[in-house]
Image 1 (cartoon, rainbow, N blue to C red):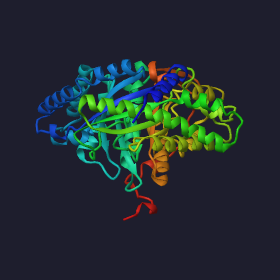
Image 2 (cartoon, helix red, strand yellow):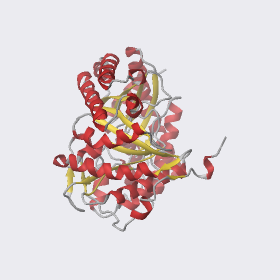
Image 3 (cartoon, rainbow, N blue to C red):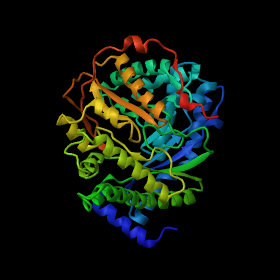
Image 4 (cartoon, rainbow, N blue to C red):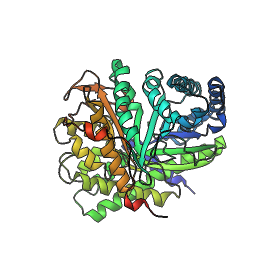
Length: 454
């Protein structure tokens, strides 16, 4: 049970440290919307989403008022659309038609994003998978609320390098089609290894095929709360540091548990998981970088950064698991560049490079996230960066992801502006030595030896 004292303590964290429930995400299974006629599929999808999610936003708003807890986003995730459209989509344009239907349904129910314009291709692509991937640039350019993801690798199956090669091209094409908005379409496209079925955070959320008909997943975030707690133990030993993070994560997770239970009860939809991810925003005092600096680093990127991030990620997970039996999703620390003012400052100071960010992804929750790169970066280079990150996830049995933004018409040192939660980002230089021959081999990188556990 969650008592009144915890609610009061939570209110203090909200007032002083930017604690919020980052998202309530309703997952919806669309497999029963399949039909041989794409127009009928679109009709089925629209009707199901608008019926199930009609009260989602209103319920979130009511709870925000009742408990005084900011609930920043209300979102929807759906079954990977490559699976739903396989029975009816013959061209990329057919998939774009579904994307526009999803966008219209999201607007109707009032959510800010809908995720699941996705394909799962870690071992190979079906024709429907390839058509969906081909449609991604146009789908993201012609919608406002659609988020797309493609899982190209896993520890169990290896990495589909044909999909990796194709996605390098699609990232560039998405950048070109949305160039008038600083290539923002790429901010809504994530490439995964080991993608979880129950992640509530965008742009990578989708409703996994192992899930039920509908589910409520809640994402809680509180980097400001953790930083404030660490200020109280400045200079003390690592044991004290770890316990402080763990206790704080416990409290933050309890907030998510409270909201998730209430949303589930009011909407009569099962509760799925709590995702405790320290997801920063551009707001001052809401930065993962500032936590790492509070731990003793002059700037993020200094020697010791990866170790500090490993401590943070591990203790956040431990605290979350103590607080709830249903911690899932990604849960840990995010290190997006554009959404974290401290990360931006470290890049601009020259302390943080793309290579150091890649090293940090070995121990964080996701991967190379919201990183702007020069617009003239080759597709094969983007594919190479994706391949490197997928390999980290595959070998280390963890989720990794890439969300790169080739800033059309811009070079290293320039800046791209997205606004809102996406913030702004300095364009980071990329290693320009060629990996063309490696990427063009095609085929599949086999699963690592430690994947064989049957």
